[in-house]
Amino acid sequence: MNPYRLIVVAADPAGLADAGWGDFDIQSCADLDAAAAALQQAPVDALWITAPDAPAQQALLHWPALSAAVLDAALVASLAQPADGLALLRRGAQDLLPLSAPPAEVARALRLGIERKRLEQAARSAWATDMATGLPNRAQLIEHVSHLLALREREPAPMALLAVRIEGFATVQARLGGESAHVLRRKVAVRLRAQLRASDVVASVGADGFAVLLAWIDAPGDARKVADKLAAALQRPFSLQGEAVAVGVALGISLSPEDGRDAEELLRRSLALAATAPALGRAGYANFSERGAVPAANDEE
Image 1 (cartoon, one colour):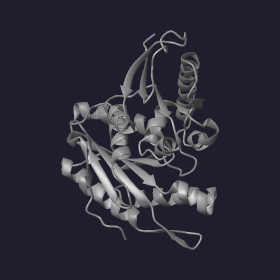
Image 2 (cartoon, helix red, strand yellow; image 1 turned 90 degrees about the vertical axis):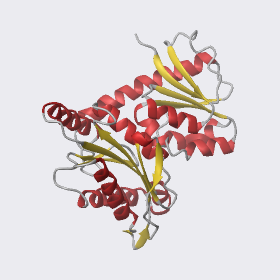
Image 3 (cartoon, rainbow, N blue to C red; image 1 turned 180 degrees about the vertical axis):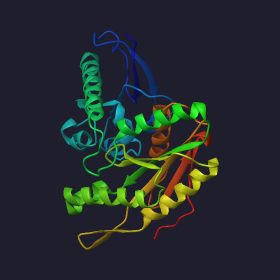
């Protein structure tokens, strides 16, 4: 069996290999920014992140790359006060451990988290539609992109995959309740769909993420134009319970064939870029081939 790919942040990985829960191919990162950069380069099976105090724990909870990271990887967090980290479980973490947890306990949590994550992925694949929005889910999107890429082997043509990260769902849920957060998610989906052609695909790819497949573009710059259009549309306030609600938005762009010819790779790269693009009240987007986030020109309304 191949070793499990593991990112370790601010933790001592010594002893995991001898714990009897499998072999781990370990990549150590000094901080969350380094971990986000590593996630852009290749998929991993798990992350083990240590937050030794309350500020570090809050930084992890509000890490922009968190949603993308837990989509396919098992996150295990070692915390000074695990009981205070339940919000991390709601964001997708698999397990919370005390800082003093021995390597055997950490290895066990990582391995079981990986297995649970794989079961989740199989369950997601069994459903073709995201029930909250009516959109295709990740599995159906990957199938569609893979089929399109296979066709393009015979008739090459450029295409783009945009990842859209939305900030604001958690705030709405805290202020207005869970149903309002679901309504906001549906309204975001409708607004995305309204900006696109019939041949383009919008899919749900996580609790705060969407993906947009531009099945046909004439030039790489067309993807930027669409990103600007989507960002501008999403920056207009939404009406919820009589209140005007604004969201933050960040986009990541991957292009085919420039950035890859594999559906999973293209989606992973665009998601990783959306996770690190700035969204502090403004829209931002990034193109994988440029290896950096580029602020959009749209101002807050």
